[in-house]
Image (cartoon, rainbow, N blue to C red):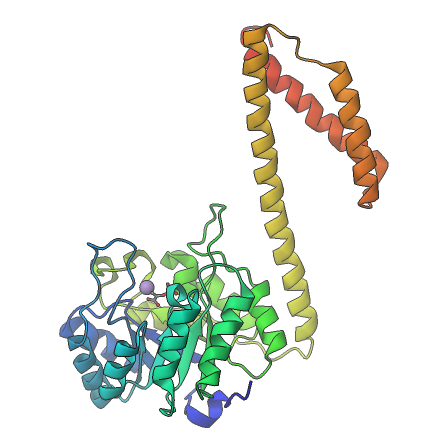
Amino acid sequence: MNITPLSEWLTIKQKPLIISGPCSAESEQQMLNTAMGLSDIGQVTIFRAGIWKPRTRPDLFRGVGEKGLKWLQQIKDTTGLKTAVEVATPYHVEKCLKASVDVLWIGARTVVNPFAVEEISNAFKGVGIPVMVKNPVVPDIKTWIGALERVHKAGVEKLIAIHRGFYYYKKSIYRNSPMWEIPIELKRLHPHLPVLCDPSHICGKKELLFEVSQKAMDLEMDGLMIESHINPEQAMTDAAQQITPVELKNLLKRLVIRQKSGNIDFEDKLEAFRSEIDKLDAELLEILSRRMDIVKEIAAYKKTNKITILQLKRWSNIITDRVESGITKGINKDFLLKLLQIIHKETIDIQSKIINPKNP
Ligand code: PEP
Ligand code: MN
């Protein structure tokens, strides 16, 4: 992809590029006050606001719509901040272009749908507006790259990717799992593509924002998109993850922007490995827990049918089969035997407790 570097189309006062503003535009006052606070920080280059909101349920607040675009224009005029809006249809693009919005972005829910991305991209043709593409909700780098390519094919060379975390079936402290290995791989495949991090939608709560922002900086992401609100508790969407402009100022002050180590490939690779291990461990635990659940069901079944817990023949078959298959996968035999014994002991303990609750 032929990408125009950020420095050629954005006069960033200071690296990294900071985008901030409310999750949703709610009122003229909320927008102006937030923008004034952000403009005072001096490090914020682009003011973001959701005008049309993609909500899970139909009765939730869906954004103020077009009238919010007027407030953005006012903010541009009074603060000099550039503005950015999420677009999900060609109609949104058309309205934003008419209202002189500076940067558009495609949201995580839209990116999963190639038809939608293509339709929106057609509306970018011949316009020259910068476009940011968030990662899709699902952890699929190909869909993300596919969306970036579709937008690029429509002639958009001022292109940015935004990492906002991914849906993961396992509960975690994050609203959306960061899975850092995915943006790292994107950077490896497309070294000239600027990649920003959106810690707000990764974290889901403001307490985690600093740590994730710092990590993004340590992984040499090009900037941050952080949601802010003049009164976060009153926010109509994403209240728990928004911070005030003053809190943003403090967060940015604490961030350590390290020099490029020259060894970033090593760091990236290490991070990718660790992230992979975290994911596999989570899967391992999930599988173990499912195995224990089945053991409990078997115990109840044996109890009803008055059958003994230890079925020696079954146990020795398990040992032979698992050791054989583990060895073909390159796992050490002694380790396998120890592991199987530990699992088997726990299985028997669980069953004993169910079959003889008073005398396990
Ligand atoms: C947003 O930026 O407010 C938003 C809706 O984000 P995402 O598309 O990442 O969920
Ligand atoms: Mn939001």
